[in-house]
Image 1 (tube, rainbow, N blue to C red):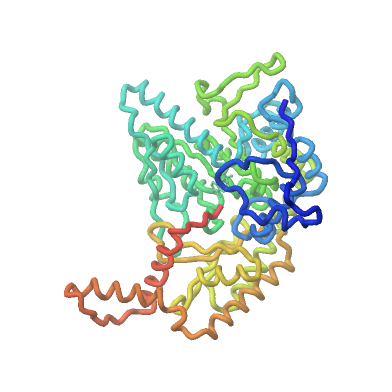
Image 2: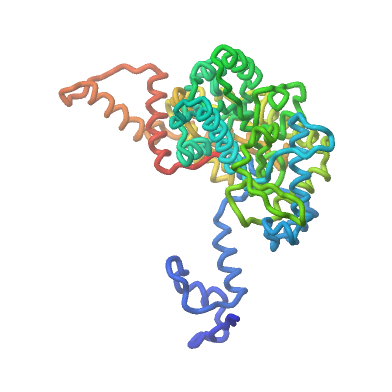
Length: 503
Ligand SMILES: *Cc1c(COP(=O)(O)O)cnc(C)c1O
């Protein structure tokens, strides 16, 4: 047994306040401190330092849930000490996860009977879900190639260049080549025609995104399915589809039930969704669902004897908390189809309001689409004086966290701001945000352009010098568009070094 004792503060005045006693010395950062401190002090010190973090509710950069009902918070706190993996000890938690899998599989129109159990698993997020789905595709493809006596050492996966970083992770960790369909100005999702063209005999799957991280747009999974059905017939291959519905999986079923993107399409073999995005649970839960048992190679499944019955598991982690799974089940039964539909309608309506407010400034082009994840992505019509990156920095003064980023290849010259609308982003906040954007624009308009132009001028000079091989400066007339591209490229290099992830 370890007894923690607090050493009396020798030499400290009995009347010292909290601050003079504990904040006089720098806090330990590298080595475990030798002595213990009172619990109140530890709490206060950490709590105070955390005050400098952004406010989650004002973090418009993230899809991840920042508000839940107090009743659910209570369930979460009560289950913090339950290890999810102890299925024998916590059979009810396991049962709740199985119910969630069934409900999501039904929502995605998986072809199984009313009382049959679906094939799927709860994960820490969509990233883990995507690793698992990708691995299943890789194994299936390899098994098929082995059977045909063909080489199976060069698997690839086809995606749009707009994929979330976890796909690049999957590709690198599991040694699969990532073949990206390039974007173009004005078209920021995967073009299904180009994707189908890129498919070859080594393609383990094509990953389509329902709700592109950058613009919220849904990719055309139906067209992709039809093109691949045709290509598979012609070539004798069997290229399947995975849908990354991290953000859109809890939107499309409620707002666009007629949109065919899920297991209604025969080539869609697995789908992931983030419970902690529009599943409305705090960070730490995702889901992956397979169309049928046949789509999840048995060699990847570990069978645990759970109260005498077989509980198959397929995850990358072992121990983890139970709270998120319990919270997901809470949301499902608390809200039901009606509740989710209501919330998604509200979010969409607030996104529309915000979009209109932003359009009204007359300074931005809207890049996001009306059908998609409720977010507004917008680019400056004219960034010759200042850029979206400076607008983003200035909005921080008001507490807003609005990310600015450039698009992936080949649309890198477009830089956008993105505001994600979550359940807790009210109309009042939307109005305030527009007012603050307006204010920032007006302030920046007032500042002489020489203030902004140092970085831009630097690029212009470099470009000019390299164009004239003699090191002399050659004056080149630039179009507004060229200038804009240069300014944005400089900022892109600038932000690349302090990359703020959009998630
Ligand atoms: C957020 C997101 C991911 C990663 O999901 P996590 O749940 O954060 O791991 C993957 N793909 C898309 C399209 C996303 O939006």
